[in-house]
Image (cartoon, rainbow, N blue to C red; front, side, top):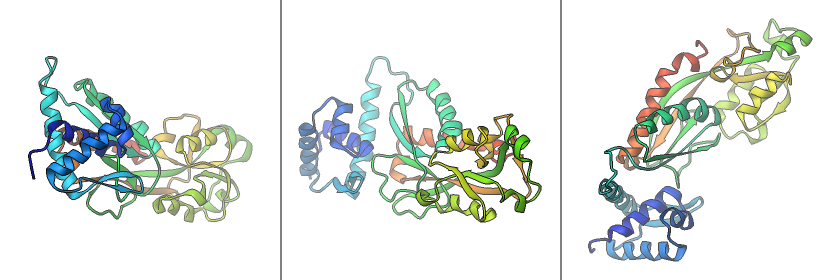
Length: 297
């Protein structure tokens, strides 16, 4: 093994963050061939493979993860050489989370963090799915329900509550159900059953087994707006629904499904200062919003 080229390490870090040679090249201003050549040179210097092709793109090998840790140190050192360096965080942090969590918890937290770290870039990919086993192109994920993962750490961030809601206009025309039995005579606004990948989100249906779907979507913002428009009774996160005065929560003692948000992150990713700071901001924001998440705001 010989001493690797610092530029090759920077290229590896870009590939690790995006999972693709072309995307890494776009970020660094290099073409695909140059990225491939630099990865090959790094593998020759280190005496082994640093990336392998997975179903979601290029994934780091064990040697690659160690090299990526070194690359993060190199990129931080390069950033500090700039004359405008203010000692703040820099680089790109990419996460995946559900729509509602991304909009109401993550985005405001990250905006506050970036106010003091203008060279930090944060990318949020919204998805309602199980935790990935590879996390290619991601620094960390936030998922619903306790995940089963390998080569990563899982940490419970907090709990939120799903409640049953209807618009005031809908209730004026159809009446307010006084029991679960009466509620099941109405139609439901919720996720598309056949496309739902998260078991924890399927559990609330057991409370209302006889309800027919009125309008279904893979996006929780559609659930909220459809319920506001009077499409039916919506199973909605309280922290999203309670923001709208035209929505009324129904049967709160009967329908109050608690679901957990979990953070999934590799230990090597947490050793990067930017990733650690973003994760910490997320922990603090989730804790501060606990009353709203539990429907007590």
